[in-house]
Length: 190
Ligand code: 5GP
Image 1 (spheres, rainbow, N blue to C red):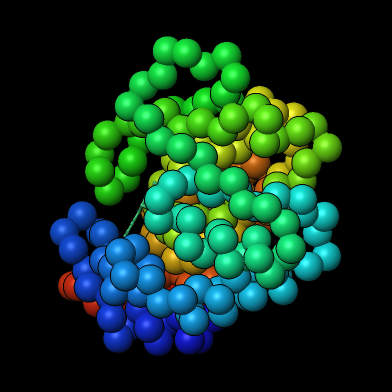
Image 2 (image 1 turned 120 degrees about the horizontal axis):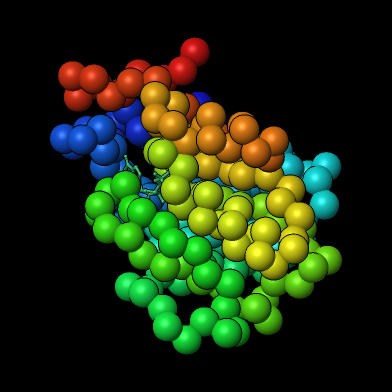
């Protein structure tokens, strides 16, 4: 998505540890117009799939996932993060290691919101090593729902996430694919 790539080049900054900071349009201040265009793009990409719900993880996945759900005309569910859960009877739960925060969290979705006839589209802001998506795939498995695809706003293609998702056979669409962040410079996949 050319508009998104342009914005990453203009406003993104590269932090140590291969982290791209995009907090003036995606992760802190949110550009609502751009989110709308991102939602429209995902809805177009996945228009031939059966999708009954969009699923993401709080908090930074919510903005693009909400706009995608709006364009698809379906509800949004965001998995909630907790330190560690003891009472989990009414929840589908998976453990996720956070790439940026370097801590493990449980993420969970209330069982009421995923039914076996659901077909979900997973949306997230970034794909690095794929832990967040893997956690959502685990939850989908526990809930016996179909995964129609995974949509990522910014994929860091030099990390393991893409190959992990490809191995599962689930369709993956990323709007911007970054080949390298070396020397504090963003290089996109051709
Ligand atoms: P993964 O689970 O794929 O290793 O990492 C994805 C999650 O980590 C995303 O949901 C995002 O919140 C965070 N993340 C990973 N890499 C980056 C990055 O370069 N920049 C930002 N802002 N977040 C990242």
